[in-house]
Image (cartoon, rainbow, N blue to C red; front, top):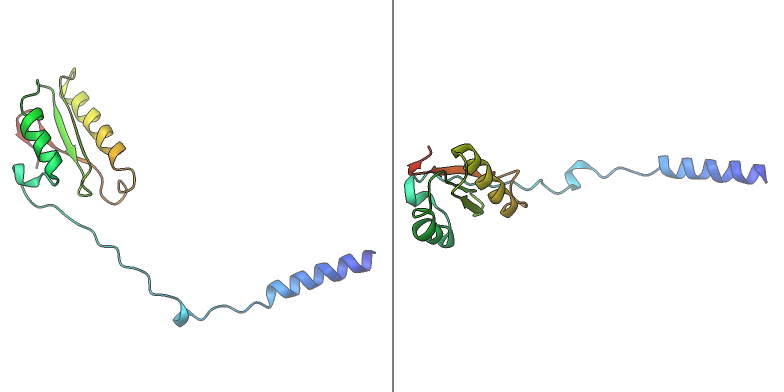
Length: 120
């Protein structure tokens, strides 16, 4: 019985080590990743129609301590009526990141507007 186990063990090791490698020229080319940027400023920097509509109809009229965040992926969020500007920025970023789970690593959310000022 012991001889059979030793034989099977050796057969497994020899079988694993004798596998050939795939030649590098046979491997597919790695796909290039396209990264996008948004060089627009002001209202023109808002990417989606829904975000622009929300910005113009709700955000602009919202009380102070507000922030608007968006990602190049199209995700966005805004928060207002917070205890401080920092609280508004943090809340808007968290909301945007929740909407941007699939793209956050490549296209992170950024604050683009605070109270009545565009962020550069």
